[in-house]
Length: 590
Image (cartoon, rainbow, N blue to C red; front, side):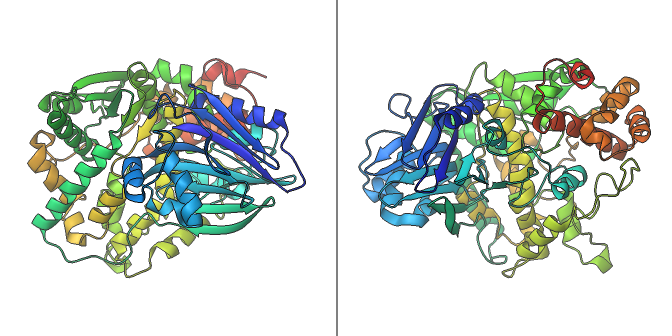
């Protein structure tokens, strides 16, 4: 896990050292263990390193003949790539094999990679720069057309900090953020900054994009014919292989443990592998809240940890901690996702960094194994009560905005059409829709930014090609039965970790933002309403009223949270004002 950036200009231009230095400074938090750069003619690469594998010889850029590479993430099958392709590598870095594969295979070089990665490589002989991103979009990568060519970076804020792009909000993306809590597709909320799409490889020559290649995350086709026992055996093998690969590390690692199915699955497999290898017990981190009645997973997580002899660390997130650190937390979300789970994730990462540099987590389980309630609804035709996922937005029932958001569902609509292809069932189409946008642009952005704010690498073993092959084309009946999603995963867990009680009713995960906001609503509401970003889109008197009553109904709490998030985000990333002090001090500052 690192940071990368660079410039690919026209042949007659040369990168300025001040720009390269600004990009590197802006990404220093992603790579506290070192920095490097490569400049050759019209191309520059910059890298900040978080050292995880090959601590001695793994500094970047990496070189092979006329080609240089910088990368963010991990290529988990690097040993197998070396062996199977007879690659002669000069380091033990997991990121060197892709460099040799590019020289041999060209634009399809990333198709054999198994991992999470954003890669930038420059080939002097071919006069090309190549950008590549992993199929699930676990690692971020952005590009922008700038004067004389293309700039790219791991985070949009680096492009802004270097003065390569002006911070201007794209109105349709703002509407998406307010209504959906994330933004969709290739375009970001910043005018002029685009995402390299998950699984995309982009070729740049003479300062312009000339080729694109896309690798899909999900296997093609509708449900396959397979029985329960065969499906369980295949799933067990896929989970064991994936978790084993994701535990490859030269530094200490742990995991994030909730009381849910997904992280319990990761814990069970980590414990099995550690027992087989005679390594230390699993180290698990869990967050909880100080509000009576709020969903608190610490007790259930403690039981799971005890059942496999794991060491369990808990973090209590208090209201005072949130108000003190919320400007920092939102400030880390430059590509904004106003998912309130950023709060516990940020605090868990801060605590984990005291002991480890790598954590495994359960992201992707709901999407691959069909865990969300909206999937069960999507399986039904409309005349039987079926509902379109995300048909309604957060502000549909709250009258505070100056104008109703428009166009906010256009991106989701386009993704829906793309997902419902290739003989997929309604359930598969709903899953594919989430894998295309919700997963990379909400859940994985949250994980990346909150962990990288503390120099911690996040790994997601359920988001793996082998696990996807074992899960996505299962018959619908092995995913959803009655009111239970993730049916096959629950069956696996019942056999391998019965303490998880996988078929018992579960309390949904919530963060008590509505309760917290209402307690200080009299003071906080007017501050939020007065912020330039919010004043532009919302009526101040109605914002103040919303904040005073944020805890009365769930939809009011969501709307108030989204406005608070946007106020802090706009202040930091559009107005360019630093987040120094607690939420009240920051919003009061002029």
